[in-house]
Image (tube, rainbow over all chains, first blue to last red):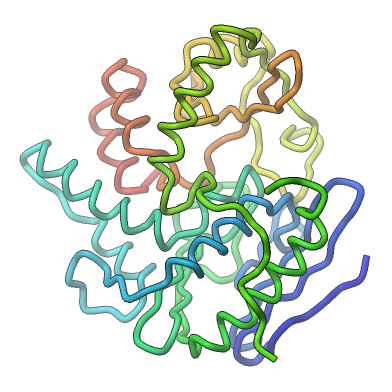
Length: 185
Length: 143
């Protein structure tokens, strides 16, 4: 069970460790020296440790389809997670207008939020978005499980795109070597 | 040297940007398979999601008995591979197939309401499992 770090924790890094016995991978995502996946559950501080196959496939799709894709509503904030938080306060008199608006936000979130790929593990709600030559990572853990206390509730950072892609691809390749080689994925 | 994009990982997984297309294709496949081969879904809770077990990395399963679990599974709303329903105390649970010969499904509480597909929420509302107030709150991602 060798622990490995890719990247620079002060800027952007992924630290992980494969656990053979349960097909699980312990994962930390560092920005500015903070592991934004850290949480406390049953009194113990820990990080995500789960079968990450779905999550890694989501990251693969995000990288492959990455392009400028602005948040669909004009909000005077920098980061996607914070914009999404504010945009979801809106109410409508008309039910069809309500559904159309939230369908639009959900469609954007499916392209930029990794949480639907958590597969039953505990995972911070992180958004990924290319903005120019950077990738913005932002998080919003305000509306998560009652029994989990996330260390970082809401925030965001901007990382040079090349640095982000190199770190994530190296992690994906190592993960695929470890867990996907024997399957036809 | 920069890393390459050659991981050999397939595309279009659950939660991916291509989710709807993939899931619609999957529903066709599941329905066909179910008619010809698959046994009816069976509720099979797993230890990892058991709150008594206190596994520190798993979403908790709030279902209290096998009977309740089987009923929720039988009356749930299928979306792709998953089945969703609401417990008596208003918690939305997701059933995941275990891909076993007996067609077992395990369950856990949906940790972020923003993860629930809008079609599922609409169907839960249409079937009277959630109120209009809950529907609007859940669509916003609020508890």
